Figure 1 (cartoon, helix red, strand yellow):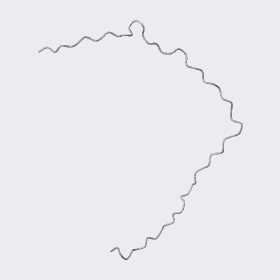
Figure 2 (cartoon, helix red, strand yellow; figure 1 turned 90 degrees about the vertical axis):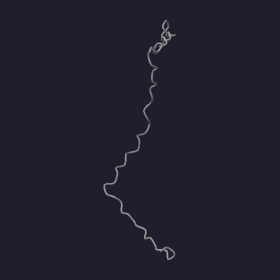
Figure 3 (cartoon, one colour; figure 1 turned 60 degrees about the vertical axis):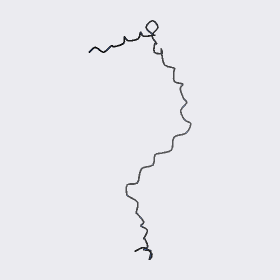
Figure 4 (cartoon, helix red, strand yellow; figure 1 turned 135 degrees about the vertical axis):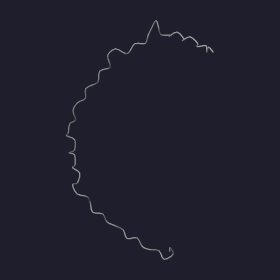
Length: 62
């Protein structure tokens, strides 16, 4: 049994293929900031203490 395979369509851009852009747009130079950025804080080296909340037993729940 032969299955008909349609021919591939012609490439519409065969005569004028799309070209990638030439050189990318130049990136504008920025002036350095006037003041220094804030210093990075170091993370704590110890775990903070955990304060537990005591759960009260409700008399209506058994």
